[in-house]
Each structure stands twice: as C-alpha cells, then as structure tokens.
Image 1 (spheres, one colour):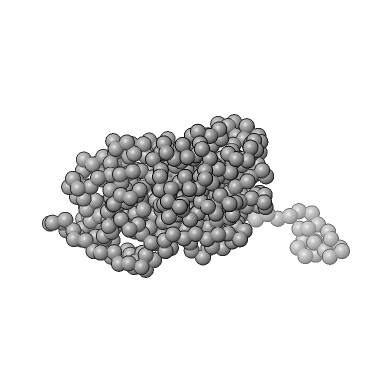
Image 2 (cartoon, helix red, strand yellow; image 1 turned 90 degrees about the vertical axis):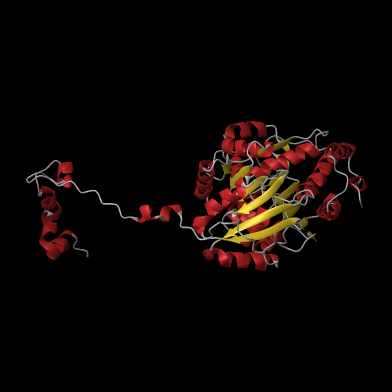
Length: 449
C-alpha cells in the first residue's frame, strides 16, 4: 500500500484526506491502520511526530461511520485518553479535520475550565470523546457520563500517563469499561511498567513498532553546551538574540523556572511566553496561539508541553534543564523536525547534570556532540542569587522589648496579670467524691475491679 486510497476508506474520509493534502501513509499508519480496521487490539510504538493520531483516528471514524449505531445520552462510543490538555485539544482537532464530511459528534473535555458546559454538552452523548483522565472521572462521578456503551478505547502517550501519576485513575477507568471493546495503545516509548499496563487493557494485541524504542528523530541535529547553572540564562539570551534562531521551544524542569526565564528574556528585550501547569487554560491557549501564529517566537514550557505541542515550523528546541526522565528528552526534541522538516536541539548541561546526560545517551544509544560556546562567552558564571551582594548577610531585625512591668504577649492574649498564665498551666485537676482517695477511692467507686 502506497496511498491512503488503498485502505478502502469511506468516501467522506478520502475526501477529507485530499482536503488536508494527505496522500502517502507514514510507516506507523501503514502498519497500524489495517489491523485497527480489522477490529484487533493494537500496541503501536513510534517516535513522536510520525502520525500516530491519524493511525487511530481513521479506523475509528471508519468503524463509527459504517455501523449505523446512534449515540446514547450521557455516553460515548469511542474514548481517547490523553495525558495533557494541549494534546487532548490537538487530537480533537485532528478528528474534526479527518471527519469534516461525516455526521459524527466530536467532543473534548479536560480540567482547568468550568465543568458545567461539558456536562450540558454530553447530555446528548458523543460519538467520539477526547478526555484527560481526571476530568473524565469528574464527569462520571457527577453521573454526566457513563462508559458502559463504549466500543473503542485509545490510550495515547501511555508512558507519559504513568510519568504524570495517572496509574490510579486509569485503573478506576478500566473497571468501568465493557469487556467487549477494541483497545488501541500508542506511545513513543515502552518501558516495562507500560508493557504491564498494556497487558491488562489489551486482548491478544498486534504489536507494531516502526522504530527502535526511544530513538530520536533522524532529522534533528543534536548538541550539548557545557555551562554552569549560573551561565544558562545569559547563554539563552545570547543564542536567541543572534538572529539564527527561528521559532524556538525552551524546556525547563520546573514551573517557577519557566517564569524566571520569561522575566530574564524580557529584561534582555526578547519576547517570550510560558506554558505550564500553574497557568490557567485561557493563558495556556493564548500562549500557544501566539506561538503558532508567530507573534511570539519563543515559548518556554515544562514537560506538560513535550507531547502536547504540534506547531509547524519549530526550528529549535533548547533544553535549558536536562530532564530527570531520559525518555522526556526524546519527546522534547521531537517538537522540531516534524512532517519531514529538519531541526536543531541544543541542551545546556551543568556539571551536576552530567549523569542525566549519560542516561540520555544510554537510552538513545548515541552520544550527544559537544558544541562550542559563542565567541567570548564565559562558561562559568555565578547565579544571580549567588552574587556577592546577595550573599552578604543582612542584619536581623531587633525583637521589640516589653517595658518593665508590661505583660508578655501570651499574658496579653489571656487578658491576665503577668505570670498568671504560667500558674494556671501548673494547676492539677483533683477528682472529688469517692474517687478522690486514690486507689482506695477507685476501688470503693468500682468494687468490681
């Protein structure tokens, strides 16, 4: 098969593929689509940016379009679980593009936005529902959705699900699913924990792997710059201001680190935006829209965006911090060199990050070349908070002294005289009556003991 028409898809699907400019399937699509069309469970492994979404979207649209079954209120026929909001939105947009000439309802639900509108929308049911696990369970708990009529389940980016701690929600969702269903798993990496999860969800699956596990995109040119932690902000500004960088994604390890980088770049006259878990959904969508439109060419993100950003024309990915999980490096740099384009991935590595670099090289089975620093740049610089002025100890403020005879704060709070609260704490409670006489009194009060 060398053309999408060889899959014998419905006419509306072929029409949509032509409108989108799709002609030749990618390797993952070529191998996965026939098995998925046949109704088999599937475990698909392919690096990010190779067309996994299309590989499961077309078979789902084909099956639902041919069945003639109508959706029921507060239910869905196909469920796609996504680890992040951005990826969920991206998947839903792909389904709408491929199914633009079909009469199927496609909804997306995730957290960070009011649940009321989502509940109202699902009252009539959905043919295809894309969801994050947390919001899906919220809807189920509110009885706005049930999963008993589900026909197809897709778990996309299964390994990141576990990285983000979704194992418990996934187990809860699994218990609600009908046993008779088709299940499709897609991921860029397949550690042992994911293999175990897949075995519990899938029944006699077909395994499709178009690339070795955790390989990096072939068209990505990689390199690492060895600098101190304190030199990283200045190096980033230097690289972004030399005019050679195009649309650039900068990855940090923490949310606060992303915000600090945006502020630092702003001081150097470089416009950027941050996207991370502390941002509201509106802020995240605004930042992504500006990045996608080109009005903001630098987007600073945590790993929440490593698999949720599908933006054309990303020329550079800069790993400001190396990730603790080496698989995340593969997904980060996969944001460039998409759809046949080429890209550049640069990592900043401080001395304490050398073990993380070795883990990445071990996982990808290739050495990351060391790049020369810009001419005249000093590789070892102190952090801003470690400068001499900031290290100088500041005098501690003097504690206010009470005037002689003035009650201390605890005494003032009790409204008593000085020392009165101390005497009150030392008083002992003595029982009265027959129990006051110690053991003898207790025995008299309770002769049965």
